Amino acid sequence: MSDRTYAAEVTVGETATVAGWVHEVRDLGGIAFLILRDRTGQLQVKFEKDEMDDDLVEAGTGASRESVVRVTGLVEEEPRAPTGVEVVPETVEVIAEADPELPLDPSGKVDAEIDTRLNNRTLDLRRDEAKAIFEIRAEVLRAVREAFRETDCTEITTPKIVATGTEGGTELFPITYFGEEAFMNQSPQLFKQLIAGSGLERVFEIGPIFRAEEHNTPRHLNEATSIDFEGAFCDAHDAMDVAEAVVSAAYEAVVENCTDQLETLGLDEEIAVPDGDFPRLTYEEAIERVNATGQLDEQLVWGDDLSTEAERALGEDVGEFYFITDWPSEIKPFYIKDHDDEPDVSTGFDLMHPRMELVSGGQREHRYDPLIEGFEQQGLDPEQFAYYTEMFRYGMPPHAGFGLGGERLVMTMLGLENIREAVLFPRDRQRLSP
RNA sequence: GCCCGAGUGGUGUAGUGGCCUAUCAUACGACCCUGUCACGGUCGUGACGCGGGUUCAAAUCCCGUCUCGGGCGCCA
Image 1: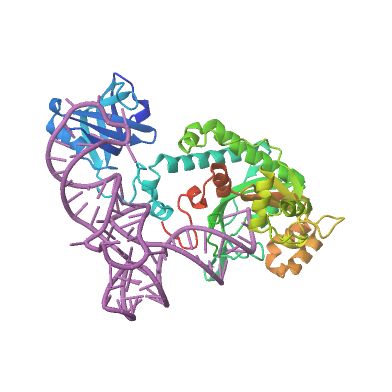
Image 2: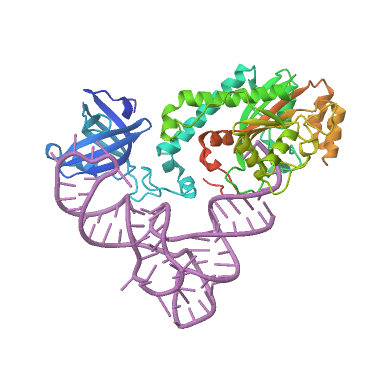
């Protein structure tokens, strides 16, 4: 198939072979048009019935929508054609016929619900809008990788089959590992810390995380893509600098390199690159600001977690990306370091998009004794985490990092209503296939 | 985990007890049409998630079940 030319790249005056899907056949009687679609766009093939072999006409106009066809013919300039050119076919070959009744309409004339779309993802992704999301997602991941490398990070991958969890709260998916109990990893947290303390010092990972929470919302997945950073000799503010740089880089790259996709999604005017300098509110300032909006029935007091309602009120009030820093120690996990002079206040931070939480991070507890105490306070047995805690006995530097939700980044960037739109084959409470 | 809502042709919908042998769009089938670009026109095929109940009468009300969507909690 090396002789194939993309629809958008045919040259007037030359004979070309194009291959793709039958987007539509418009039969006007004496003349018919087949609109062929491939990854680059659409191309019109013309059938003038009086001047062509009946078999050729039948092959072209008789093909059902979404059938795969290969067409060879002369490319002619034609102002009346949608793209200004059209193909006069010499041969038309139906490579793979499609059933006439499609489970969803790839031309986009009739909407389909998210469930129908996900059940028929291949067809769904023949639509430009759906395709654009994943082209943008790929660009986001590329830009994020580049941004991390620019801050001297090494890309790593850590195990997804693990013996213990990371944190108390989140549920784990249990699996059997050669007769032993094991789990799907909910976060690379402990592993990336171990590597921050290794000779690599500054690392990042983009990989799957698994969470067995039975939540049912448009912003949660049971398998998500986590973008993680961990750096030795970093404090919380250094980690926030990296988070800012990475998120900004993703926006810049998409605006720069995905103009067609943004236009397809109707976002070319709407998307704005953040200025890379996000406000950093302390937790205390944040709850005061929420209370000042007057949108909550009950005033928040120090120690409360931010409810979804509070997050929204604050997001609306701030109106841009912002950090919440210095969270109460007791609502942050054990591996987050407290301030030396204020043990009730942690170095934990969240990066918020006005719509939702995007990042969670902090400086880590690198001292052995307080770390062990932290495990015990959270009701965890340090013995079970010996593979982790032991390494803190051999020169663990101060370090900090964060985890960024990859799908949430794409979702908020593109204003998607449902996080499932940002995953090819999402795993949620009810969906295990495809 | 707690709570709410919805399931009608292939797809998306209208329909809150009789007017439903169920609306509309699109798709599908047939025919007509030589410049469509959401092509147009005529005709046609095709559906009330499943099981039980209430009622003279159920797509519509009730119970159960399955499936899906969403809110909260928790989080990325």
